[in-house]
Length: 113
Length: 114
Image 1 (tube, each protein chain N blue to C red):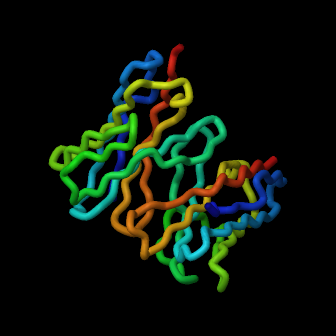
Image 2: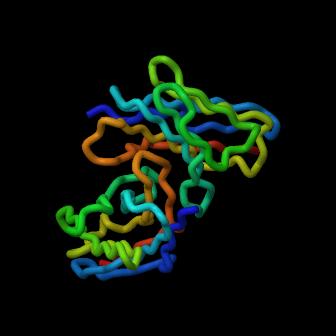
């Protein structure tokens, strides 16, 4: 069974600074997708960034970027120039192609003004 | 752009009652997923449907059943409700023809069992 592990239950960052959230996963599949979802207090699940496993280039979306290390099965999220609105629970998720999402335990991010 | 619609948004039930949660996927999406998120937990996969057929099954209790209808909307039926069923239930939809593999989440139905 696939597992996703987020070893940081809580993280904090100063506004305008950079923070990195960690995620590791375990799978025997070669074709899969990885995602970071943001869940603010409204509890809505918001997609932050996605990575296709077959792509070596790390995905980037504005202030959000990932460090995808396929051999190490590591998928970290870097948030640059942190803003107060970035405060939320962040979930790392794994998906074999066209299948269910398996989530990590989540990391609660606090942004200090 | 149209999003996934879930109804009701909030539901309060007594123990041993039944509940029906509804999900309306994004137009032209052919796959629906149901997830359960307990308090302080990550979402857990329950069940999915592709073209009205069950495509995958996760940790869904036998007291729960679900189906996808001809118009692609889906319903999650929950019977003999227990206190532990109190959770946020998400529906997500996707399209097998999608360019990127992405499940679009609805706002969730918050179920409280008293």
